[in-house]
Length: 208
Image (cartoon, rainbow, N blue to C red):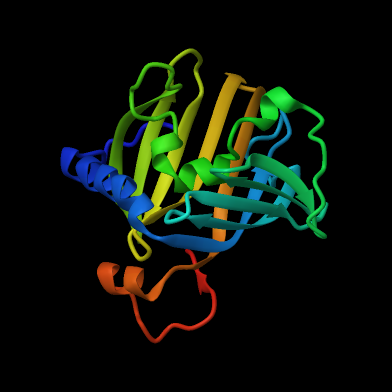
């Protein structure tokens, strides 16, 4: 993913402003996909795709992410912390407790204060700048300790980030690529009014 020459300071500041306002949306829910590619084929279709259903509640400071294939959910509340449960609500002991403490990539994208992109101590990504594209802004980022690059797409219809794409090109014929993209969203009516969305829309608002 080469850095675009269309990056401007104006677009960068606008994209950052939208990111900083994301957590003022009281509740975000919908469906999304996690995708990963084979090490030797980063340009073809993804090798694995996992669909999830999610809810981020910024008033309650809670979230959940349900894997539709395995019928398991990761969830977080202030009182209980992070838990893994099955569809009946029974707790499942996590197989890898150290990694389990990290928030899912999708949830961090929708909770930008938890995303390591702001130049704070310990943040892994550095913003290069953003460009205006159809329906939104594309933020370009570099990894601080590797040649990896990433793109974060902020949709201006929803005023929310909806896609993260990360590529680590080790050699021309070898690398790693992963992506998470929101496919559909539910947002509160007050968020639609605030952002100027069409109030007549009902059901799931499809991103993209």
